[in-house]
Amino acid sequence: MESVLRINGNVIGKKPHSAVGMTISKLDSYRLVTIGCSIGLLLLASGCSSSQRLSPEELIEAKALYESCLVCHSVQEMQRGPIIDGLPAWYSRMQLDKFRDGLRGQNALNKSEQLMGSARDRFSDDRTIALLAQYIEELSVQPYQPVVRGDAEKGAQLYTSCIPCHGDRGQGNEVLKSPPLNIQEDWYLIDQLRKFASGKRGYHIKDIEGIQMAYTLTNFEENDFKDLVAYIQGFQER
Ligand code: HEC
Ligand code: HEC
Image (cartoon, rainbow, N blue to C red):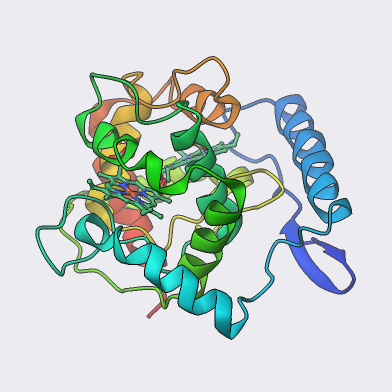
């Protein structure tokens, strides 16, 4: 049985799975839990609960703000970024903070990330980031057509090392700051794995979560990524 962490009856995260097949040491994962919890409690203490639905007025404001993102984050025009509908607010908030502060999106070797980095003047304050992140969470997840081909069975074995942080069905773990993997399109997932592995993401000295993620791929080879993603495709909620 999986144990969950609750505050006021709300599930705020899951405790890590058993350590079977982990590539990171138990110690590392516990250290992460401690960091995650203290940040989580800080947010709660400041009245910033992780999932406060937008009021009707905020919804209108957020929708207008998100309009400018659609040029890249929808299939409306030429899609240049991932479809992010339904990503949890805590994760979008964390990533938007990173783009704003230059921990992501300022590396000349990472062209697509630079595109997103160029949009950072649109979310320069915390309130705008919080509104956008909550809005994205309230959008329905878009199912995608798989385009990555690989050996899902091999991928399932490789995926055991991801379970402690991302969950057995890629549901993610807020306490460990690990995003879900059952929402993003497969081409984006493989692209990100390659970027972490080649130092194009998770390179900034202050990007603790990105560095942690990149480190977990140390023993993986390029060929493993398509197998991993072929397995992750099966996590899609339809
Ligand atoms: C010029 C195109 C462009 C615009 C405009 C843009 N984005 Fe992005 N965004 C991207 C690209 C491309 C990526 C993926 C970067 C990569 O490949 O690493 C991205 C990534 C993201 C991510 C991270 C997703 C993840 O899974 O890590 C979030 C969140 C995001 N964008 C939100 C927004 C919001 C909110 C806006 C509007 C304020 C916005 N973007 C505007 C192109 C854009
Ligand atoms: C120690 C915990 C940990 C382990 C183990 C781990 N990850 Fe992650 N992963 C993270 C964190 C934290 C992030 C967020 C990084 C950031 O903030 O940029 C992340 C981000 C990602 C992303 C980017 C998602 C997005 O929307 O941009 C992908 C893809 C991913 N992980 C896949 C995997 C796979 C596949 C494995 C197993 C091979 C794995 N991870 C193992 C913690 C982990």
